[in-house]
Amino acid sequence: MHFLKQLRFVAALLAAFFVLSLTACGSGSNSFTWFVDSIPANLDPQVASSASDIIACENLYSGLVRRTPDGSLAPELCERWEVSADRLTYTFYLKDGLTYTASKGDPSDYAITAEDFVFAFQRMFRPGTNSPYAVEFSALENSAAVLAGQKPASALGVTAAEPLKLVFRLSSPDETFLSKLTLPGAMPCDEAFFDSTRGTYGLTSASTLSSGHFYLYNWTSSGLFLRRAASGSQIDSLRLVENTTSSGQSAEELINNEKCTAALDDSGTPTSLQSVSYSDTTWALLFNCDSIFASTELRQALGSVAASAVEVPGGGLFAEAKGLIPDGLTVDGIDYRQTAGDVRPAFGDPRVLYIAARDGGVSPSDFGRVSLLLPSGSGLSDTAELINSAWQKEFSLFFSVEEVEPEEFQKRLENGSYTIALAPVQAEGGSVYTALAQFSPTGGGLTGYSDALYTTQLSASATATGSTRCSLLAACERQLLEQAVAVPLFTQQKRLLVANGIEGLVFDPFGPVLDVTYATKSK
Image (cartoon, rainbow, N blue to C red; front, side):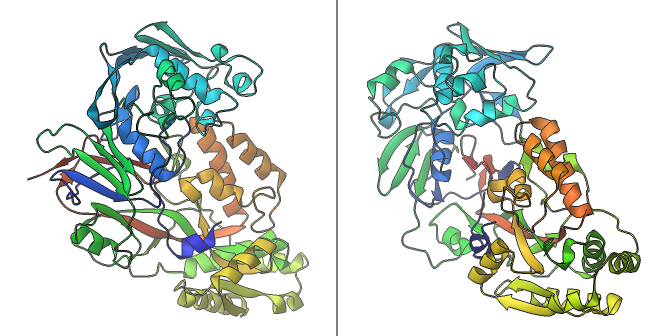
């Protein structure tokens, strides 16, 4: 749990796609400017991993399919596709006459064929490539053996049946296979051109070819600039630059002052701009299972009272928590919360649970060492006092409240030097698995919780796909909540602020995805 990043509200990017209206700003009448943490450094789609590199690749390259503004998948470089009845074979028919585009929009002699996709996927699974996308396509036939070097790349379940006919063979069904084909790693790569770059593929303008709607116009230490031919109200220029001159301005000021087109914001203050709210963080009570709170009944008793007493803080930064995992996150492209459902447990009478804990060996003297820990600067002091008051009213228990600096808070969580903590549980990068793995002994041991069933199901989720993976993760989340290891209180909201006037932007903060292919600017 990267708490320091959370406390400074470093914006992540949402596990759902949004259609936004934005006013273009920056240079050019139809340009789109996005501030990145660092200038894109690698445009090799099979290995691109930083947020800025991924966003650049999403606009520079096209694959077999592309996500549209309404959230559907549309043919991109293919005319159509077929899926076998057992969902193990996918056949794509490519468009004829497609070619790559060189920098500055110059034409190239390299045609886009099925062999380019075969080579791209074989590169992905070569052990030396270290592609972050190999895990996403683990359902491909022989993928594990090829990745381990036990079989040649040619054994991978991707073949060119004809120059314009591409076939994928899966060893097991993957209901999200089509959506994964929008990832940069699934973009085509011409083998002859790749070899000609002599190890510099995607690292310079000269060694980069575009298969998308945009081409590489300029790439310097000042930024990366993509363009396409002007066409009516279409966005024809994408600028990925660093904010080097306006760091003190708010997101709204940056947009209104035409420094950028859209910006991530954490203020929650009223705005005249469009906004999209999302969350990757849930504030929860964490009970240290290596303390007096080894008692499940005691955790349940205190947790149920706290959850009933807490109100969502005002100011627009928080919202009701429907579980430990915030709304809007996806697993393999599937809405996790919708699939998992409401996993919040209905505990019994808290006083009965408390008496059971006392009868089970919890000593009154043990409560003298209990305190409620929270980070200073979180703005949740009143919430902590409200919880404490509820415990005093219900159980005649009153604990000290410790507010410590974020650095100390993080250290004490990591080494287990607390009994109860009011803490942010973050799904880093929008990953449901990451959020839940923090509670396993091998994933951080956040609360000292150790359970064989939890560990087994979490491990199984790492290799499962689609709805099966969602079900396994939901079982883990349900177990944490039923045993009151963590008690979710409310989610912390973030938002994308956007200017007015542009339509058709495809945005997913956790992809990350910022695709302006369909974006237009109204006059």
